[in-house]
Image (cartoon, rainbow, N blue to C red; front, side, top):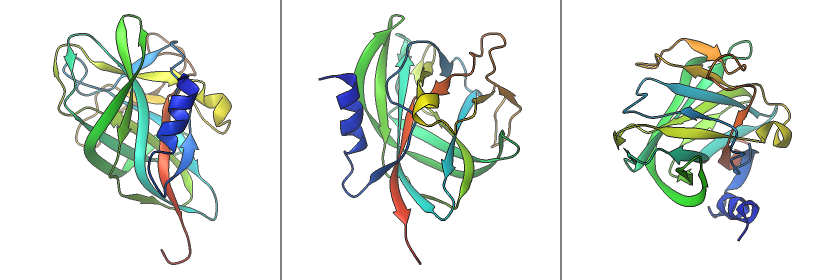
Length: 204
């Protein structure tokens, strides 16, 4: 089974849901950003998506691709954060959801097992606008971290902006810097993720 077919099946796995935003679930092997302790407990990464004018989204599922260091242990749950946008950067936390995740093996990248993580049971409703989203593993243990992998999402969703990272994120606040190619924080890549749910109609 090809990786493209795996991604398609993940997108169709939830009855009644549709793929609301597709940033590509195939890791390109170029880069990744830490989203977990024990090594990086206060690091958060955010990539953007857009709820079109005239729509409201009910986000029920978040799927992303992460590569895990060999000594890192998965805690079984993901925290998904959504931030508002201010001039093309994350601002305030507008929604958070913590839910068990499932995972399926995708590939080995730089000696790390890379998985497609699927987080179900989210209940996030958003009006039109640009938002920022990112996962975190709050119950991880062992040593090292998990890396949210990059993808070709800029081609799949051309309205994308570059991502942002905060290395001091605590209690819903952090100092955000762009992933603009300076230093070890990657360069202009987009993170591998997909958002699933429903477009709400009328008074829903």
